[in-house]
Length: 321
Image (cartoon, rainbow, N blue to C red; front, side, top):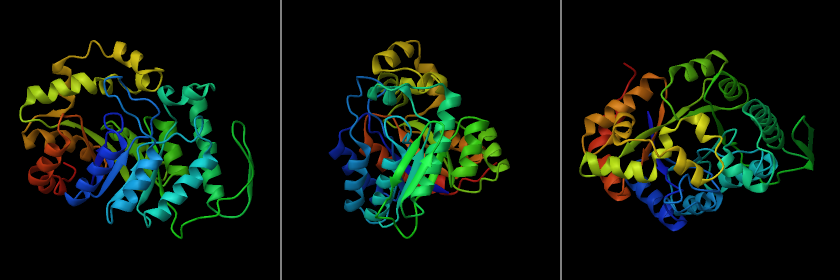
Protein backbone atom coordinates (compact mmCIF):
# COMPACT_ATOMS: atom_id res chain seq x y z
CA UNK A 1 0.00 0.00 0.00
CA UNK A 2 1.36 3.39 -1.07
CA UNK A 3 0.12 6.52 0.71
CA UNK A 4 0.11 9.95 -0.92
CA UNK A 5 -0.63 13.51 0.15
CA UNK A 6 -2.85 15.73 -2.00
CA UNK A 7 -1.44 19.20 -2.54
CA UNK A 8 -4.59 21.33 -2.63
CA UNK A 9 -3.50 23.68 -5.40
CA UNK A 10 -6.87 25.44 -5.39
CA UNK A 11 -6.52 26.33 -1.71
CA UNK A 12 -2.87 27.39 -1.33
CA UNK A 13 -0.28 29.44 -3.18
CA UNK A 14 2.83 27.93 -4.77
CA UNK A 15 5.32 28.48 -1.95
CA UNK A 16 2.92 27.04 0.62
CA UNK A 17 2.41 23.96 -1.56
CA UNK A 18 6.18 23.54 -1.76
CA UNK A 19 6.44 23.79 2.02
CA UNK A 20 3.70 21.20 2.51
CA UNK A 21 5.42 18.81 0.10
CA UNK A 22 8.66 19.01 2.09
CA UNK A 23 6.70 18.34 5.29
CA UNK A 24 4.90 15.42 3.64
CA UNK A 25 8.24 13.85 2.76
CA UNK A 26 9.51 14.18 6.33
CA UNK A 27 6.22 12.73 7.64
CA UNK A 28 6.68 9.53 5.63
CA UNK A 29 4.28 9.95 2.72
CA UNK A 30 5.28 7.99 -0.38
CA UNK A 31 4.22 10.62 -2.91
CA UNK A 32 2.47 13.95 -3.36
CA UNK A 33 -0.19 14.50 -5.99
CA UNK A 34 -1.24 17.88 -7.39
CA UNK A 35 -4.12 18.82 -9.65
CA UNK A 36 -3.36 20.77 -12.83
CA UNK A 37 -6.04 23.49 -12.81
CA UNK A 38 -6.37 26.93 -14.31
CA UNK A 39 -9.20 27.92 -11.93
CA UNK A 40 -10.08 26.85 -8.40
CA UNK A 41 -13.41 25.08 -7.93
CA UNK A 42 -14.75 27.96 -5.80
CA UNK A 43 -13.62 31.58 -5.63
CA UNK A 44 -13.31 31.29 -1.85
CA UNK A 45 -10.41 28.86 -2.35
CA UNK A 46 -8.51 31.68 -3.98
CA UNK A 47 -5.58 29.92 -5.70
CA UNK A 48 -4.53 27.95 -8.74
CA UNK A 49 -0.79 28.17 -9.50
CA UNK A 50 0.85 26.53 -12.53
CA UNK A 51 1.31 22.91 -11.52
CA UNK A 52 4.45 22.20 -13.54
CA UNK A 53 6.41 25.07 -12.00
CA UNK A 54 5.43 24.01 -8.49
CA UNK A 55 6.22 20.33 -9.07
CA UNK A 56 9.62 21.21 -10.55
CA UNK A 57 10.43 23.32 -7.50
CA UNK A 58 9.31 20.50 -5.19
CA UNK A 59 11.51 18.07 -7.08
CA UNK A 60 14.65 20.03 -6.27
CA UNK A 61 13.65 20.59 -2.61
CA UNK A 62 12.98 16.90 -1.89
CA UNK A 63 14.97 13.70 -2.19
CA UNK A 64 12.70 10.68 -1.86
CA UNK A 65 9.04 11.49 -2.26
CA UNK A 66 7.24 10.72 -5.53
CA UNK A 67 5.47 13.42 -7.54
CA UNK A 68 2.29 13.09 -9.59
CA UNK A 69 -0.17 15.19 -11.52
CA UNK A 70 -3.70 14.32 -10.49
CA UNK A 71 -4.58 14.91 -13.26
CA UNK A 72 -3.59 16.93 -16.33
CA UNK A 73 -5.59 17.13 -19.55
CA UNK A 74 -3.32 16.81 -22.61
CA UNK A 75 -5.90 17.67 -25.27
CA UNK A 76 -7.39 21.20 -25.14
CA UNK A 77 -5.50 23.68 -22.95
CA UNK A 78 -2.29 21.77 -23.67
CA UNK A 79 -1.21 19.91 -26.77
CA UNK A 80 0.11 16.42 -25.91
CA UNK A 81 3.51 17.32 -27.39
CA UNK A 82 3.88 19.92 -24.62
CA UNK A 83 2.92 17.40 -21.94
CA UNK A 84 5.31 14.81 -23.38
CA UNK A 85 8.13 17.34 -23.07
CA UNK A 86 7.06 18.62 -19.63
CA UNK A 87 6.72 15.13 -18.16
CA UNK A 88 10.05 13.98 -19.55
CA UNK A 89 11.77 17.05 -18.11
CA UNK A 90 10.15 16.62 -14.70
CA UNK A 91 11.19 12.95 -14.67
CA UNK A 92 14.78 14.04 -15.23
CA UNK A 93 14.69 16.83 -12.64
CA UNK A 94 13.16 14.48 -10.04
CA UNK A 95 15.50 11.55 -10.81
CA UNK A 96 12.63 9.33 -11.92
CA UNK A 97 10.14 10.18 -9.18
CA UNK A 98 7.38 11.55 -11.44
CA UNK A 99 4.08 9.92 -12.40
CA UNK A 100 2.05 11.53 -15.18
CA UNK A 101 -1.62 11.44 -14.26
CA UNK A 102 -3.85 12.32 -17.23
CA UNK A 103 -7.57 12.62 -17.87
CA UNK A 104 -10.12 13.91 -20.35
CA UNK A 105 -10.45 17.24 -18.54
CA UNK A 106 -13.00 19.59 -17.03
CA UNK A 107 -14.62 22.57 -18.72
CA UNK A 108 -13.55 24.63 -15.67
CA UNK A 109 -9.94 24.58 -16.87
CA UNK A 110 -10.06 23.83 -20.57
CA UNK A 111 -12.55 26.44 -21.84
CA UNK A 112 -10.16 29.27 -20.97
CA UNK A 113 -8.30 28.95 -24.29
CA UNK A 114 -11.58 29.62 -26.17
CA UNK A 115 -11.63 26.26 -27.91
CA UNK A 116 -14.53 23.85 -28.01
CA UNK A 117 -14.88 21.66 -24.94
CA UNK A 118 -16.38 18.57 -26.55
CA UNK A 119 -18.78 15.95 -25.21
CA UNK A 120 -17.40 13.09 -23.14
CA UNK A 121 -17.24 10.61 -26.04
CA UNK A 122 -15.12 12.95 -28.13
CA UNK A 123 -12.99 13.90 -25.12
CA UNK A 124 -12.09 10.27 -24.59
CA UNK A 125 -11.24 9.79 -28.26
CA UNK A 126 -9.01 12.86 -28.02
CA UNK A 127 -7.37 11.46 -24.88
CA UNK A 128 -6.61 8.24 -26.73
CA UNK A 129 -4.93 10.20 -29.52
CA UNK A 130 -3.03 12.34 -27.01
CA UNK A 131 -1.61 9.27 -25.29
CA UNK A 132 -0.58 7.82 -28.65
CA UNK A 133 1.28 11.06 -29.40
CA UNK A 134 3.01 11.11 -26.00
CA UNK A 135 4.07 7.47 -26.40
CA UNK A 136 5.31 8.20 -29.92
CA UNK A 137 7.43 11.15 -28.83
CA UNK A 138 8.86 9.16 -25.94
CA UNK A 139 10.29 6.68 -28.45
CA UNK A 140 12.76 9.38 -29.46
CA UNK A 141 13.54 10.89 -32.83
CA UNK A 142 11.42 13.17 -35.00
CA UNK A 143 7.79 12.13 -35.08
CA UNK A 144 4.59 13.08 -36.90
CA UNK A 145 1.02 12.02 -36.29
CA UNK A 146 -2.28 12.61 -38.08
CA UNK A 147 -5.31 11.84 -35.98
CA UNK A 148 -8.95 12.71 -36.27
CA UNK A 149 -8.63 15.41 -33.60
CA UNK A 150 -4.93 15.91 -32.90
CA UNK A 151 -1.85 16.19 -35.09
CA UNK A 152 1.90 16.34 -34.68
CA UNK A 153 4.40 17.67 -37.19
CA UNK A 154 8.05 16.69 -37.19
CA UNK A 155 8.52 17.03 -33.42
CA UNK A 156 11.17 15.58 -31.14
CA UNK A 157 11.63 15.58 -27.36
CA UNK A 158 15.39 15.87 -27.00
CA UNK A 159 15.70 15.29 -23.24
CA UNK A 160 14.25 11.88 -22.40
CA UNK A 161 14.88 9.95 -19.17
CA UNK A 162 16.27 6.42 -19.33
CA UNK A 163 13.15 5.27 -17.48
CA UNK A 164 9.98 6.91 -18.77
CA UNK A 165 7.31 8.18 -16.34
CA UNK A 166 4.40 5.97 -15.38
CA UNK A 167 1.19 7.23 -17.00
CA UNK A 168 -1.89 6.86 -14.77
CA UNK A 169 -5.15 7.47 -16.64
CA UNK A 170 -8.23 8.83 -14.87
CA UNK A 171 -11.31 6.65 -15.32
CA UNK A 172 -14.93 6.87 -14.26
CA UNK A 173 -16.49 4.21 -16.50
CA UNK A 174 -15.77 1.39 -19.00
CA UNK A 175 -14.46 3.48 -21.95
CA UNK A 176 -11.88 5.39 -19.89
CA UNK A 177 -10.93 2.23 -17.96
CA UNK A 178 -10.11 0.58 -21.30
CA UNK A 179 -7.96 3.55 -22.31
CA UNK A 180 -6.10 3.27 -19.00
CA UNK A 181 -5.42 -0.42 -19.64
CA UNK A 182 -4.47 -0.08 -23.30
CA UNK A 183 -2.44 3.14 -23.34
CA UNK A 184 -1.62 3.84 -19.69
CA UNK A 185 0.53 2.20 -17.04
CA UNK A 186 -1.90 2.74 -14.20
CA UNK A 187 -5.36 3.86 -13.16
CA UNK A 188 -6.59 7.02 -11.40
CA UNK A 189 -10.04 7.50 -9.84
CA UNK A 190 -11.88 9.58 -7.28
CA UNK A 191 -14.66 7.20 -6.23
CA UNK A 192 -14.49 3.79 -4.47
CA UNK A 193 -16.13 1.92 -7.33
CA UNK A 194 -14.87 -1.63 -7.74
CA UNK A 195 -16.32 -1.80 -11.25
CA UNK A 196 -13.75 0.75 -12.44
CA UNK A 197 -10.87 -1.44 -11.25
CA UNK A 198 -12.56 -4.56 -12.58
CA UNK A 199 -12.99 -3.02 -16.04
CA UNK A 200 -9.39 -1.84 -16.01
CA UNK A 201 -8.08 -5.28 -15.10
CA UNK A 202 -10.43 -7.06 -17.51
CA UNK A 203 -8.97 -4.93 -20.32
CA UNK A 204 -5.46 -6.06 -19.34
CA UNK A 205 -4.47 -3.34 -16.88
CA UNK A 206 -1.95 -4.47 -14.27
CA UNK A 207 -0.45 -1.20 -13.00
CA UNK A 208 -0.83 0.93 -9.87
CA UNK A 209 -4.35 2.07 -9.00
CA UNK A 210 -4.59 5.57 -7.52
CA UNK A 211 -7.61 6.98 -5.66
CA UNK A 212 -8.26 10.14 -3.67
CA UNK A 213 -9.72 9.55 -0.20
CA UNK A 214 -11.93 12.42 1.08
CA UNK A 215 -11.06 13.61 4.58
CA UNK A 216 -10.95 16.73 6.69
CA UNK A 217 -8.93 16.93 9.88
CA UNK A 218 -9.79 19.34 12.72
CA UNK A 219 -9.89 18.95 16.52
CA UNK A 220 -13.65 18.29 16.28
CA UNK A 221 -15.98 16.90 13.61
CA UNK A 222 -18.13 20.03 13.28
CA UNK A 223 -15.18 22.32 12.54
CA UNK A 224 -13.88 19.88 9.94
CA UNK A 225 -17.26 19.46 8.24
CA UNK A 226 -17.83 23.23 8.14
CA UNK A 227 -14.45 23.67 6.43
CA UNK A 228 -15.48 21.16 3.75
CA UNK A 229 -18.81 22.94 3.32
CA UNK A 230 -17.07 26.29 2.85
CA UNK A 231 -14.28 25.30 0.44
CA UNK A 232 -14.80 21.77 -0.87
CA UNK A 233 -18.53 21.14 -1.21
CA UNK A 234 -18.02 20.95 -4.99
CA UNK A 235 -16.60 17.46 -4.42
CA UNK A 236 -20.08 16.17 -3.59
CA UNK A 237 -21.65 17.27 -6.87
CA UNK A 238 -20.46 14.20 -8.81
CA UNK A 239 -18.27 13.84 -11.86
CA UNK A 240 -20.95 14.68 -14.44
CA UNK A 241 -21.31 18.09 -12.82
CA UNK A 242 -17.63 18.56 -12.04
CA UNK A 243 -16.57 18.00 -15.65
CA UNK A 244 -19.12 20.32 -17.25
CA UNK A 245 -19.42 23.61 -15.35
CA UNK A 246 -17.27 26.48 -16.66
CA UNK A 247 -16.38 28.70 -13.69
CA UNK A 248 -16.15 28.83 -9.87
CA UNK A 249 -19.37 30.85 -9.70
CA UNK A 250 -21.21 27.96 -11.34
CA UNK A 251 -19.84 25.48 -8.81
CA UNK A 252 -20.86 27.84 -6.03
CA UNK A 253 -24.43 27.81 -7.32
CA UNK A 254 -24.52 24.08 -8.05
CA UNK A 255 -23.31 23.14 -4.56
CA UNK A 256 -25.58 25.45 -2.51
CA UNK A 257 -27.80 22.53 -1.48
CA UNK A 258 -24.95 20.44 -0.01
CA UNK A 259 -25.54 19.98 3.74
CA UNK A 260 -23.29 19.23 6.71
CA UNK A 261 -24.80 15.74 6.94
CA UNK A 262 -23.88 15.12 3.28
CA UNK A 263 -20.29 16.07 4.05
CA UNK A 264 -20.04 13.82 7.10
CA UNK A 265 -21.47 10.90 5.17
CA UNK A 266 -18.79 11.08 2.46
CA UNK A 267 -15.78 12.61 4.24
CA UNK A 268 -13.83 11.40 7.25
CA UNK A 269 -14.15 14.48 9.47
CA UNK A 270 -12.62 15.31 12.82
CA UNK A 271 -10.11 13.58 15.13
CA UNK A 272 -11.27 9.91 15.17
CA UNK A 273 -8.77 7.64 13.35
CA UNK A 274 -11.37 4.87 13.08
CA UNK A 275 -13.52 6.98 10.76
CA UNK A 276 -10.55 7.63 8.46
CA UNK A 277 -9.80 3.92 8.33
CA UNK A 278 -13.46 3.23 7.54
CA UNK A 279 -13.49 5.62 4.58
CA UNK A 280 -10.10 4.42 3.29
CA UNK A 281 -11.19 0.79 3.56
CA UNK A 282 -13.89 1.43 0.95
CA UNK A 283 -11.20 2.31 -1.58
CA UNK A 284 -9.01 -0.63 -0.61
CA UNK A 285 -11.98 -2.99 -0.97
CA UNK A 286 -12.66 -1.50 -4.41
CA UNK A 287 -9.16 -2.53 -5.48
CA UNK A 288 -7.05 0.62 -5.15
CA UNK A 289 -3.47 0.33 -3.87
CA UNK A 290 -2.26 3.96 -4.00
CA UNK A 291 -4.36 6.04 -1.58
CA UNK A 292 -4.15 9.84 -1.74
CA UNK A 293 -5.01 11.67 1.48
CA UNK A 294 -7.18 14.57 0.28
CA UNK A 295 -7.47 16.76 3.36
CA UNK A 296 -10.06 19.54 3.11
CA UNK A 297 -9.66 20.57 6.74
CA UNK A 298 -8.49 24.04 7.81
CA UNK A 299 -5.06 23.05 9.19
CA UNK A 300 -2.67 21.18 6.85
CA UNK A 301 0.08 20.92 9.48
CA UNK A 302 -2.36 19.53 12.03
CA UNK A 303 -3.46 16.96 9.48
CA UNK A 304 0.11 15.92 8.66
CA UNK A 305 0.84 15.48 12.37
CA UNK A 306 -2.38 13.48 12.77
CA UNK A 307 -1.44 11.28 9.82
CA UNK A 308 2.04 10.62 11.16
CA UNK A 309 0.89 9.84 14.69
CA UNK A 310 -2.45 8.11 14.14
CA UNK A 311 -3.11 7.13 10.54
CA UNK A 312 0.11 5.86 8.97
CA UNK A 313 0.44 2.64 11.01
CA UNK A 314 -3.24 1.85 10.45
CA UNK A 315 -3.22 2.63 6.73
CA UNK A 316 -0.08 0.59 6.07
CA UNK A 317 -1.92 -2.47 7.36
CA UNK A 318 -5.03 -2.06 5.20
CA UNK A 319 -5.91 -5.05 3.05
CA UNK A 320 -9.10 -5.83 1.10
CA UNK A 321 -11.85 -7.24 3.35
